[in-house]
Amino acid sequence: MSKLSLDGYLTVTMIAAMGLVGACSHHGLATEYPETPAARADSVRLAVVDIVHARCDLEQQCANVGPGQKFDTRDACESKMQGTTASALNIQDCPLGVNNKKLETCLANIRAEECTSLFDSMSRWNACRNGQICYQEASALSLR
Image 1 (cartoon, rainbow, N blue to C red):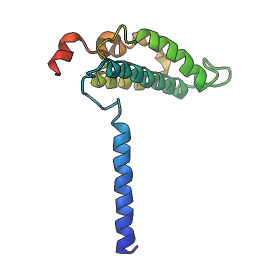
Image 2 (cartoon, rainbow, N blue to C red; image 1 turned 90 degrees about the horizontal axis):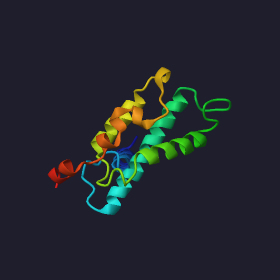
Image 3 (tube, rainbow, N blue to C red; image 1 turned 90 degrees about the vertical axis):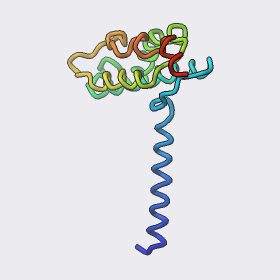
Image 4 (spheres, one colour; image 1 turned 60 degrees about the vertical axis):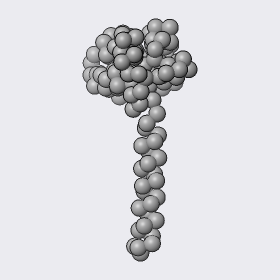
C-alpha cells in the first residue's frame, strides 16, 4: 500500500470511528441532568426505548420470539413491552428525567438475566424501578 493510500485509509478509519463514538453518545452515555422539560421528557422516552430493546433482545436470546412462542414476532414483543414499560416509566412518575448512569445499571441487569428466570414486569428488576433510575429532587439539584 502506498503512503498516500495508507494515509487515506487511516483518515477514513478515524472519521468512521469518531462517527461511531458520536452515535453512541446520545442518551445512553450522557450523564448530565436534563435541564428543560422537553429534555426530561426525552430522557424518559429514550429510556423506555432502551429498556424495550433490551427486554426484547433477551426474549429473543431465550427463544421466546417466533411462531408459536411467547411473542410471534419481534414487533409483537416490542409492542407489548412498550405498553408495559411506558406505563411503569413515564414523565408523570419521573418528572425530573432519567439518570443515564442508573439506566445503564438497569440495562446491564436485563442483559445479565438468565433465560430460566425471565419476568414479565419491569418492576421485578429493582434497578429499573422509577425510584432507581429517575432523578430525585435532591440528586438533581446537586448536579447543577
